[in-house]
Amino acid sequence: MVSKPNCARAAKNILMYRQGYVCVIVGICSIEYKGRAASYADFAARMLIVKPDGTLLIHESSKREPLNWQPPGSRIDAFCENNKLIVISKRYSPPETIVVEFNSLDTLILCKLASTYLRVLGTEEDLVKLIISNPSIIESGAEVIGKDIPTPMGKVDVVLRAKDGSLIVIEVKNERAGISAVAQLKRYVEHYGSMGVKVQGVLVAPSLSEEAKRLLHREGFKFISAREFSKAKRASLDMFIKKF
Amino acid sequence: MVSKPNCARAAKNILMYRQGYVCVIVGICSIEYKGRAASYADFAARMLIVKPDGTLLIHESSKREPLNWQPPGSRIDAFCENNKLIVISKRYSPPETIVVEFNSLDTLILCKLASTYLRVLGTEEDLVKLIISNPSIIESGAEVIGKDIPTPMGKVDVVLRAKDGSLIVIEVKNERAGISAVAQLKRYVEHYGSMGVKVQGVLVAPSLSEEAKRLLHREGFKFISAREFSKAKRASLDMFIKKF
DNA sequence: AACTCTATGTCGGTA
DNA sequence: TACCGACGTAGAGTT
Image 1 (cartoon, rainbow over the protein chains, first blue to last red):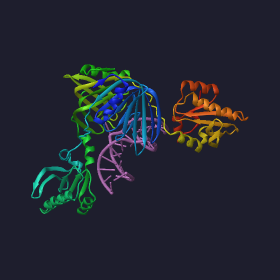
Image 2: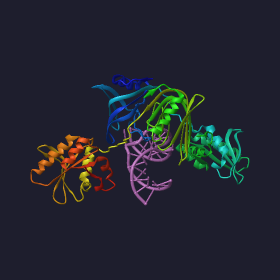
Image 3: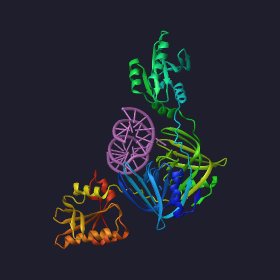
Image 4: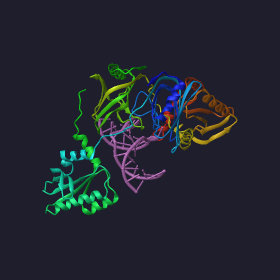
């Protein structure tokens, strides 16, 4: 939705942030900020953005960073005074205030935007694929034997063979791993161990609970942070290159 | 300037960033990013901002941070393909690419914004403390006489004694100084001058109105930019003094 | 809530 | 260009 710049309407539209709307205003404004630091910016053409979560951004014509801002959770008020639009954003802990005064309005947008803030970087399946496609991440020179290999205790996520012939049994989690994950890994390792093979246990997860860490250490298993993989993913991702 | 969403026009308007325009597009888009990391965001309502310096921002309805972005200096291309708007931003060192594909356009803004990126840090009290703790910033070898010194005209923010025995009267503002600030300084200077002492006037402020600048010059006072001044914490010194 | 660590950090400085 | 430090860092995860 786009509308003509009108002080009263602008104020009303800004307050619509409470109903889930994003409001954008382009106009000439001054900005006063006090809080962790303090600043004043004289009247000039700028763009103000108000988001439903209380975020306030003021952008100029350069830089990635806003000239001034207020983080999510701030409380915003907007009203007309002498036919000027005043926008005030307050935040507590730490106490911070921004006062924006528009003496001229140019453009006004009111819209609803997505709120995914979703970053697709790696499901458990992605991690498994990544290990399969490049087992050297786990151990240099290792070869893939297979994934989702059934055993009496359940399916082993990945099994590799190390250069020295020993097996590497890998349990993959895409959430913080607890002792159950380590116990599961332990069962797999013991299963293969009982067949008279030398076996290493590796747990891949974003993080590890304290108990899991202790158990892992006691069993002599290895932990690899899933974060390391998303880094490696950069190198192996070549899916979307387009012409310029 | 606001216009109806039209694929060809949108592409053309985005490219206006090379002529100093900021372009904002609200619509439904997908985003592919590959560079230092990698991500894909499925089609959803978002806001894209392109700045004259090559900055590209994609915002959703929450968070201060953009969902995806490209820093200043990136090269942006925009065109229509199958009636869909494609925006591509490339950057070298490090190599990074963003591909945004709009399958629906909602709003389009083209505007010119200020490029001050002025940041004034420090409260007035901070500035005073800074001067007190290191008066040499104002003049090499100067000594502190006191702060908030009462006079018949009001309290003088800081008074120093220069090496040659003359007084240095300092007026500190943490906002753009107008003639009133200079006039106040003038009164203080005249007050001490009437006591038969040699007096210098110094104004510390983030900026100065044109009239204030002229008056300051006429009176032979010094102006120190508060912005430059805050840098003095680690750098030195007299170079920051500007005389008009 | 406080603390720690990461980030496509960004940005400004200097060598 | 690369390295170094500061930032109103923001934001996520852990204690």
